[in-house]
Length: 354
Image 1 (cartoon, rainbow, N blue to C red):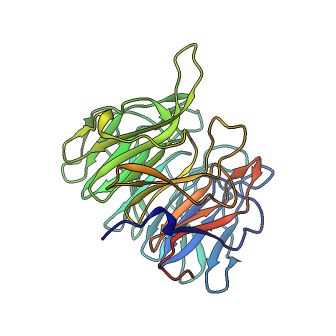
Image 2 (cartoon, rainbow, N blue to C red):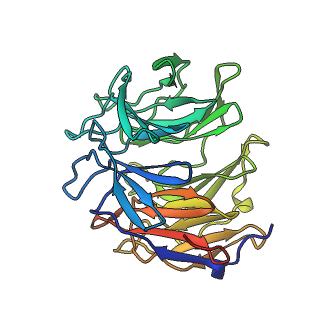
């Protein structure tokens, strides 16, 4: 199927949040969008939970989380939302674990983590959640890999990662969990490792080409990791710089593509939204060398092998949360000097918009 042309992508403003929000978590259950926690305009973590109702274009308040938190790891286990760790009201990591049953509309406290952790990465396989890394209350990174069984309400430790880190990017491909990048305190990590669930062993892959943070990270349907833009860490006496570089790892070849095989984005940016929409990599908003937050959007055309400009977002912002639901990209909240209440959807015009 041919990918859409640039002019076929359109933005639509949807119902704004009741207040500005950043570092909130988004999850989809049965095609419905849930928003959990985050920081409000005062910078404090909230217990807020809301459901977006497209039929009436409204956000509806749901029972609040038992624990206020921002930056929580959220996993979907059937009809239930598992909420793990994050940062609490006192700006400290949390070990609280809670489950929301979307059919009953009720929260339940579950077995806590062994210690307080923020910056966890989480994925789901065969009805079980796998949480990787994190930063503890001592501000040091962790190498822990833990598995959660919802039915038994038990956390089990699996073999730890070779490289401790938090804020890593992870992806499940078959029976393997790939873990790329992340941070160790203020230092960025180039390590790229994979956990094989069948053999219960970790392997090291070729390190990422450069250290960078606030990148866009995508996995395409061919099993390639695409690392887009971000902030490149400078040397001892050098400042960090925004980049438009694109690095791609091919899991089939087990190597990073050479730089001449990739195509850089049009604009240097970091802390932006990234998604694959109808076969095209899309990046939106973020921060660049300009003094203000970006509203620009571009998409990569795989046949033409070039990035093309799309219509801009109505509300420029960085640190926005995003999610793909039914081939549509929803961008919720973020920051534009203060936390934003904007909620926009990117869709292809040939479709009917809700």
